Length: 254
Image 1 (cartoon, one colour):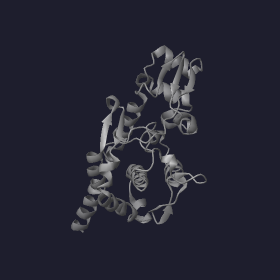
Image 2 (cartoon, one colour):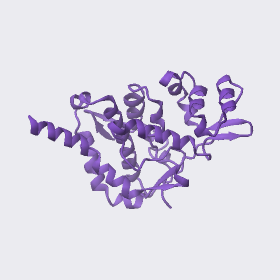
Image 3 (spheres, one colour):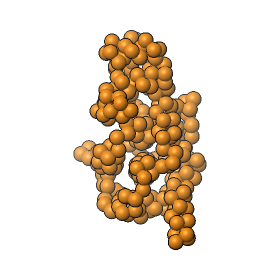
Image 4 (tube, one colour):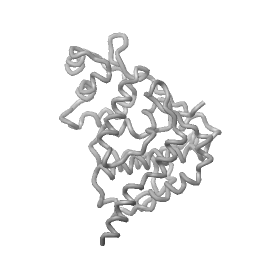
């Protein structure tokens, strides 16, 4: 019994060790710490290591997953999304300059079923929208999942872990909102990433008693560079919200 418990703890503790080794080796901090870039050329040389990590994710059964804490489940799913996104890019690199070039004219790359997770063939869309967004009332996941594009929040250089998830999600949120190239005051309006347009409903579902996008953004007013007065204006609707352009270029290291 003791050996079984120890073995289970070791598996949990080391579950994302391979992903950590890959992130540390191939992901680089850029733009003053607000973004990261990926050296896909060097990553491609470690495809075997990535394959082993992805196999460990696919090997998790629904029954095992259901026994985990909610935080560990969510961390697992975020890591899975990010790792399989890298895998999808590597299958086509260096012949692409954007993830949107994958899949052709009639099929989005996010709708391609190309991996197995929790007993079923999955697509990235299914993983993000049906497995993560529908089951976890956590808007900060939008600053953790990475779509391999410059406009995306940074791909973290560390795996998400259940026992560290609150710290990691908060750090990812603060980092993204503090990036003045993506979010901040300009010409009398608060200009923010299109992420807040695409997923506005996720920021208005009562997380920490925040029931609207302006409430969510005002909650992070300091990160956005807003004064107390501007935060009040944002909540009241006096400060307009506008959206910046999204850069779909591949987040590759030059």
